[in-house]
Image (tube, rainbow, N blue to C red; front, side):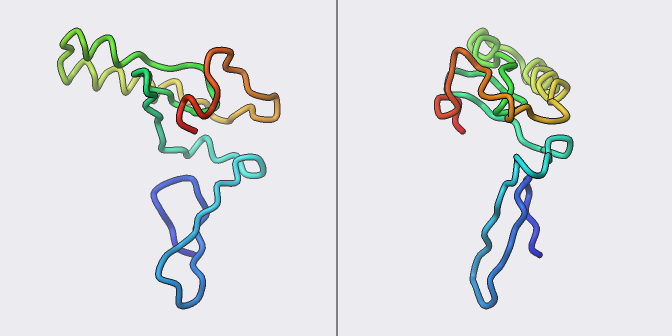
Length: 103
C-alpha cells in the first residue's frame, strides 16, 4: 500500500498513475498521530479541524512579531492537539461552520 504524508490510507490501482486516499476519521481515530494544523482565513491556527481551540497568529503578525515568537505560537498550537476527536457528539463550534474554517 502506498503511503503519504497525512492521516489518509492510500491505495493504488494496478497500472494507475496516481493514488487515492481515504481518511476514515469515524472508524479509525488517527488523531494521536495527526501531523496537521489548520490556518483559518481569519488568522487562527487550529490544532484540529474539529476542535474550537485556536491560536491567534493574525494579531502578533500584524503587530510585527519576530519569527521566534511566531514559532512559539505554532508550538503552543501543537501542544493543545487533542488525542482524539469527538465527532460523534456533533459539531461544537458555535461561531464557525466546518466550511468556514476550511474543512
